[in-house]
Image (cartoon, rainbow, N blue to C red; front, side, top):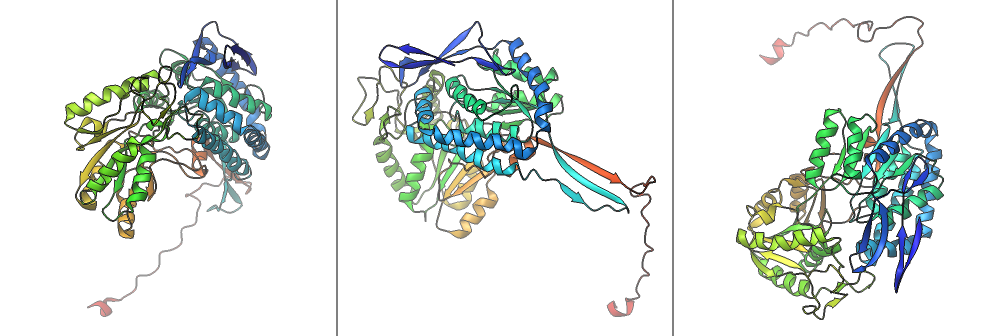
Length: 530
């Protein structure tokens, strides 16, 4: 890495690919600009070529064999040192996250803390990659199971959580003895380079982790997935859109591989008539507009019992219009800029789709311009990608805006009559990532937990938020059933090996050589049941 001064702005970070234990510059590069100030070139990164990506995979394949022979508790010591380095550098790393992708500083700190928590959790798992001893049906025979690494893992991550989500993938994959080729988001190449530097300082051996920068289709992301069919990648772990996830799933399926796919969501947040409305409104605002709605777990549909809809509608409108938007380094803001022009463009287009569906606008969100910036804006409208909140009202579950994910500060109000209609509406999209319900009724809590199709459910909390020791992932269009985080993710990065050790000195045939006991004589109970 290198730095390049800018006039009146922080320096630009110039990063390289890292292949086979050595930095590698590419002829072609791209810029990542600060979404809060487009004059600020935060990072210049290389566009890895197909041959460079293939070289990284070959190096990873060679390095993986030696890394797998390192005892798991020793591999875990690298994870432990990584956690210490993350903690020591939490504040500057958090500020760089805010600068590069626009996450509010307090959220950026939380994202780095998630990586710290993940490192601490999996350091201890290095001493618990347990197999089992299993009793045999034959004498003088022992049975065992072992977890073995899968091999080379291709990791492709999104830009909205540029350090938390990569930590969910890299840490357990490497702990389990795999090697990794990582293609980070082109929205956060600088964060990736800083995170990778910490891995090197933690003592990770050369070649075990390579980083190839670039974009998706027609670039490093596509080149990396192509290595599945080339026989150089044994596992793919991907966070991103459902559309791309389908394509990756098809490619991996042809090779009989199971990828880890963490995809989109259209997450329901239910407010029943007996809910604590102040708590529910607070949770709904956070779920809808945290990170400017650019989370896969952001609330998409707020489903409200008709008896409290007037109050919910009034409070949401009042509080959404009062949200402070602006510079992500300003601790007073509710949310900052959109991550990139593409997300902003899609969010603008969603307005017309909603109106065409027949929805109405309770709060009409728009891109913030210098002449329209109001008292609740504290950023640079001319240079930043900012937008005010949008709330669609009178939405039904048949409308496209109720079904389609939109990465941006937008949410729908859906009115229902009672619990059964609320649950039906919550399950009425093809997604199944996150969900939430606000109620004081313990029976409704239980019925919602049992009836919702989402992989994650909150009771009296928002749809967003994850902890390092809980499984994260969804069903339907939100994923293929694999999970991130906690002990459950270890299944994604290991394969089971069954071993039998026969000490009898002769061939013993299971099921065949087992003595079959004589069946018992039937009892004459006829007189008792006449």
